[in-house]
Length: 162
Image (tube, rainbow, N blue to C red; front, side, top):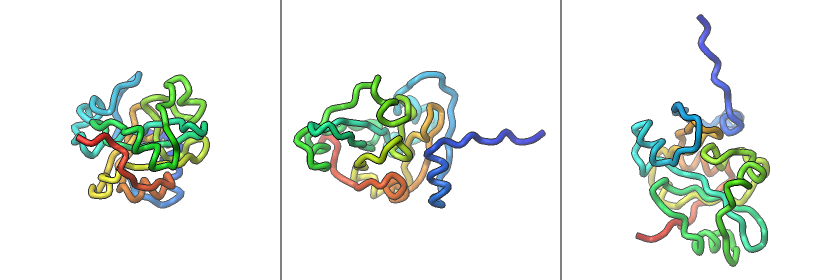
């Protein structure tokens, strides 16, 4: 019997085109669950799993931030990192219209448009991080540097201090 062909997401196609290696992790899920639940389902360490957040600046421009799942985005640091006066979280109902992805499947790679993107700077110390693969049920594992390359992102200090 033929092996079922994996249906690639836009993010996977972009990584393939750029010849960036990645590992796909899949899980069964019909609706949004948070990153911590996903990490637990897949048996992944929380510090390696990152979530993608989309914000809107006071200029009305959109910005993307990639941070560890157990951390909180510091809106002041985030705004400063993209030279904005302030940023606020994008409303859930607007995620698809802005990014082309749905909540729980949003990734910094391959959005409808290219938005300024920042990855939490602590990611640079990790060999690999895990981010959404562009749909619910798919996670991608790749190096932080490769994610930055594929998403045209920069590293910045953007999380709340403990």
